Image (tube, rainbow, N blue to C red; front, side):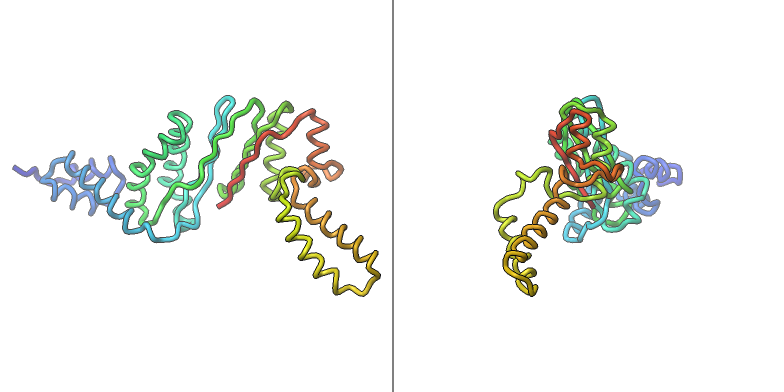
Length: 259
């Protein structure tokens, strides 16, 4: 025996799921007014919708950083447009996934993520997918998020959280590709050398001068790309290396993610 589909029943299902009134009405009609069945139908529908949108490009989204004592978790959630990335359901979903990862671990969160994501896909009409998730542990951690699009976590050996956060902010702005010179591979060095050799070869100067110009260009290029050699954005008289030395600190780990 079916139950009458009342406005109250539709509202109850909508409050529980957040999907449109029409979707709730259709699900209740299919379920004969049974709330449990209607919820199951909507869950299946959200999975079907997510599957249909799987081929679309989720190029936008947001990043967030969750922190508790000795741990920082950097998590990204992707969607198709900036509009949806600011949607309160999307923002709440990102926060919930981050909390879940802190509580139960990243791998368990990933296993449960689709059940949380699919209903929001159904509500927003866009493809939504989990991006990268990084967990950083340490005694001295600094976090920085810029416009919900770039997130950086810095872990220091010694020093203090304020310095770690300043370095995270610096990394957000300056986008270093390497932490220290030793991180630069021979392959990269050779590639950059070839690029600047071609540039210098066209200059009408003696070979000895051209050699020094080449060395200077390569040194400047890698200095701009290497975190420890970069000039600290908050103090033009210090490099990041000098900032760390001043605070008796060393970098242990850096994680950066950009939408």
